[in-house]
Length: 83
Image 1 (cartoon, rainbow, N blue to C red):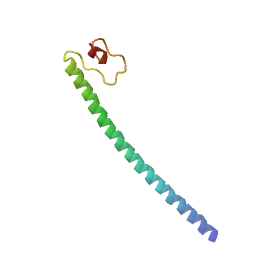
Image 2 (spheres, rainbow, N blue to C red):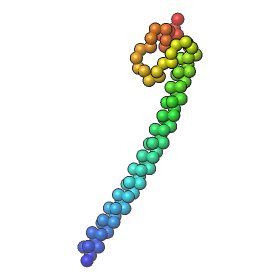
Image 3 (cartoon, rainbow, N blue to C red):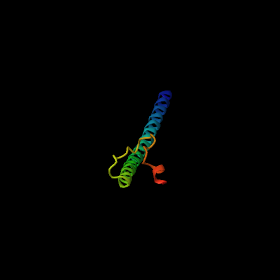
Image 4 (tube, rainbow, N blue to C red):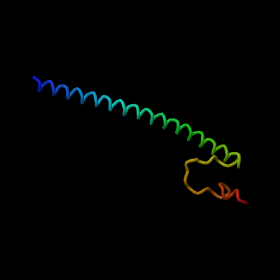
């Protein structure tokens, strides 16, 4: 009977540890998700600002894609401002 009681106690401890670990992981996932949401909102604002600045520079030009990594076309970008 004592052996059975010890096994049960060990199982209960393991379950409590697993529940605690799951709670910690859940809390960490929530914090990460909230940070991702904040960063996504910040990125949206930065992208909008890039478009606004490009439109101020040349209202006739099409709005640039803020995530486009290609070289800027002639007459646009920092090199064009050095004249």
